[in-house]
Length: 416
Ligand code: NAD
Image 1 (cartoon, rainbow, N blue to C red):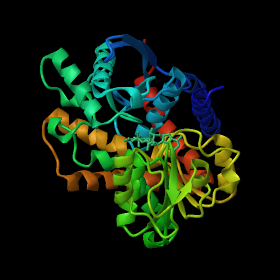
Image 2: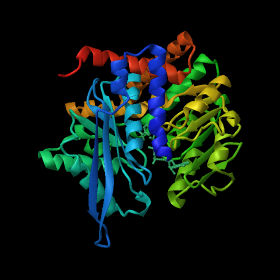
Image 3: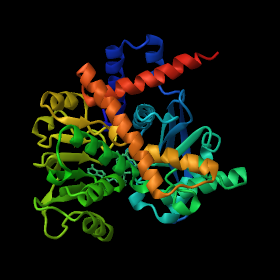
Image 4: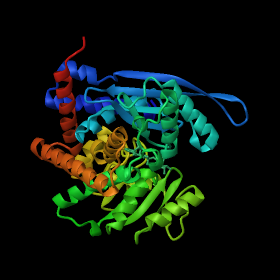
């Protein structure tokens, strides 16, 4: 079984566990175990060498009881329908746990962006969008960036949709550049939200940010900004990796200099003045906070008993398997689950969508302070639930989220 199929098994298993715990109505449980709808599209494009290549793309809506489908688009060779479905399901819970009015969706194209030219990437994005032109829309389905997609790609999606409807429609996609209706603060929002949840936890534990040492797996959008924000607030970032490997310096790394080095050299590997470290070693580094911000299935039964950090904040989606969850819980780790810890991205995407629909834009201070309000409230609700029910923060987040989705489904009833 591939890691991607495994992600769906894990997502369903997590739902099954919470269903049992809260005595979920079996008819709701049965519906939530499956996506509402899934699209598979062929994406033919002309390559720079004039040959035509056909890529496979997906879009999955898991549940839209609480609002339009919302979720990122991933460009990665390992993208499958099963992985996209798992990610869509996690989006349903994520939007519910922070209580924003969206359902869960995800999309992707199985492709290797590292070998595609800018022109090829643009043609791929436009054709993928065209194939789903009747699916996407500001009231129906609003995509956003995910692994190996970025604001430029969102801009091409916005343009393709706008050309089709005949006017500029910023509300169809989030994570856009500011000049075409993006929101201030969106780029760093996932990381900022993750850091807010870490600070809420540190307050509960009476610990200071200045005393923390941090290791970050995945030095992309989420990992880099998280490192930079927590460094600016006084913590020491001592290790970081990307897909090629990583670096470690117990005296601390400079996150901005490291990002510049990655920009120039394509990786953080061999950054001067630091030791080399593998992705597996990074997870076991002696630090107080571990931020997995890369891919799924990184913390498993194999390495969970060797994790030294006592706070794990999931910037990535699905980095921990359920078996590893249990090990970490038994070891007394503070584990901030993905659907809570990385919900800052979709929260500011929600702000961007609202601003786009109203054509009225907010200051960065407004965005960040509204984000803080939502993240702090979500953390408190999940923390209280975890204490009351004596469960992991992940189970507590699921209880909050699944109850919200269930309430909406029961109130709306079953059509026809
Ligand atoms: P990105 O493409 O900007 O960065 C991904 C980083 O991970 C890159 O540095 C890449 O080199 C590295 N990487 C890839 N495979 C790796 C591996 N096997 N081991 C270590 N590093 C690896 O993507 P991103 O937007 O930062 O997303 C990272 C994670 O955060 C994903 O799980 C994504 O679903 C999740 N996430 C992203 C957002 C967002 O707003 N971008 C929101 C919520 C969750």
